[in-house]
Length: 357
Length: 261
Image 1 (tube, one colour):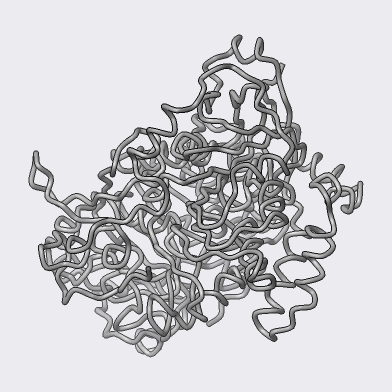
Image 2 (cartoon, rainbow over the protein chains, first blue to last red):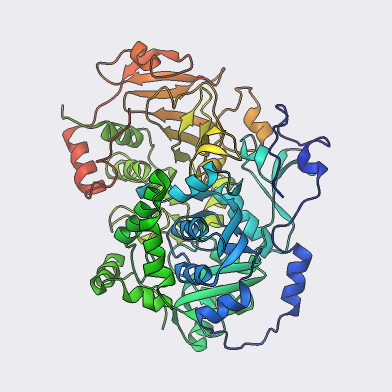
């Protein structure tokens, strides 16, 4: 149901009984905390081989109407391979949840605009959607201007804290931002007075996605994950989600995981399907492995921008036909990228040291 | 005096207002370059925070293109995720926020969410808060970079994304539940603004050589306060420009851009 974004007559800080935020029962867009807990309780805790093909994993967990948490940050260690498979598989009426995202969100938006009977996003809980150095996200701008998508705005900390609250099994978490901004008026958080000091404190609702999509540096076959470079909000999203699909640059031994248990950022309990997918964040960056392919990102963005500005679908459609629907697997997509590109982006990473053996 | 571009003036000004031995929370682009320049000149003890999780990295692989990328993590002292660095900020460890936006009002509130139309159906949707809203709330002082244009220096924001002094009431930030002391400087290529402590309104502190305060007022929709101690903006020296162009952003990712003014 679409929210009614009314402004409450200059009454900010401390919502009252008359405010719409307290009048209506809060609606969870993924599982409620108790339902999410039940799913965790019901899972086998056995150390078993979680490896699946991308196709099998997406087929098992992605369905119409669910909420998807997207890991990484902008184009850093984002689950591009999994998103390609979600688009091939198709899913309608999705809710997306992320802090800051770029190509993954735009790929889903483009699929919705070109193939609405196959993929659609009804709402997004977010802090930021764009391309950083390259510019704004054309498909977000298009969807928003047409009123085709419902947005629920928080800060990057707000979204991260919401995932963290869900990872902690809570309903909400207090934060010291959003208050006094217009996000306070439109998002689903609530200002309360601290029971201990009386100070106004903003509460953001926990965010429990049905399925978390993440890409990590390395994992053992049971799903114990190691992440190098910025962790972004990946551990929190994995632990918040009812189920998680994780792709990894490489599989490492369980013996290695147990040698350095402090380095495990996501425990096997929070992983349901694991896919060994080198270059799984391409054309995004993955610390220790590869840098961005800015040329590829720009190519997709300019096709998107042409669609937004002129309505011409052809270049964007060609992108999906060549790189997503025309590819059976993500490796088939990678095979369409010139080999020297991978040499170049590996070099640009500079061989950051990572511990994988 | 050397010839410099508007973007170089903004970046240089950003650098010179950063104090040594402080922590600056930086976003992608000019804030990073300003902080790098400050480290190389008057503030070797300045540390940076990048919101994807890095504290005090050494940017010796070149300029990051994203606050989450490999270069932004290079040789950091502490590398975790968003929760960790924003919690450091909430706890009081980040001195400066360095943010941008599409619109600013006289109380230093900033919009980076949408322009025109309504929240549910905006004429022009921007990327959204990202880190800006939380940085403006919880870093101790907020520095804002903005192109000096009437349509950006507005009487009323279409949406308040990053909190400044709100409606200017003395306890606005306190009641909003945020921690930092609020807007500190607004940097443009022709003027440097601060905020008058009592009214919390934007005040013109410095103007670019050759400009008059009337010319600045013409590019601002609200009425500007003018500091009785109005100063000329310091210009970058040849050495500063060399650092900016050849060390901080040698590939010209940001410094070669135009300020749309």
